[in-house]
Image (cartoon, rainbow, N blue to C red; front, side, top):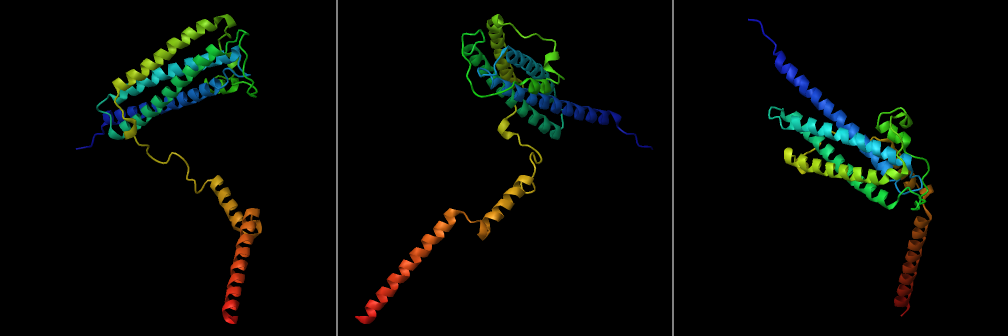
Length: 259
């Protein structure tokens, strides 16, 4: 009797692998956007702060929120699936931990921007801090938002009089992210301290170029010709102490001999 391949099982496995790959891509995109938002948030209140920076923050914030909603729905759907294989469940839990950690960092940065924007208004009354930064974060924000040029985005820089309205919108978004974090903990019970990464996450430090450079430096320091002044000074002090001890021993022996 000829063997019949189980195409249904293969299709299910393939679909779950694609779901895992989609989740990894979404989480990776969110991490990049959150890192971009943190970079832009560090410029609020500084000498590079401007209406354009506030607009870049808004666009990056909206992008991060859209990704967060998609990732939350995607991971929640698969982690609550009891038929999910154990290996794929572990990978999904890793993505869940990375996603929740990024979301918490994003929430912290949003609160920081909200407070700093209230202190350093762009209406001309507040003086910005001269922190020595130069340039803006348009290129970083454009890469995070997958745009060839941020100035080509279909958005206009908000007027200075809309800062109060923007503060109100940001406050609502902060509360929305806060509720999302709480709902995530209720829907999926993933203990972060129980999730362990699989495989090497970083290259071997022994074979890295930096470690090789450090090894060469350590070899150079061990050579006699490259001794530091402190090392030569220590050798000289030891030599003087040895001479003093030798002289005292000779005097003691001569006194005992001639007495």
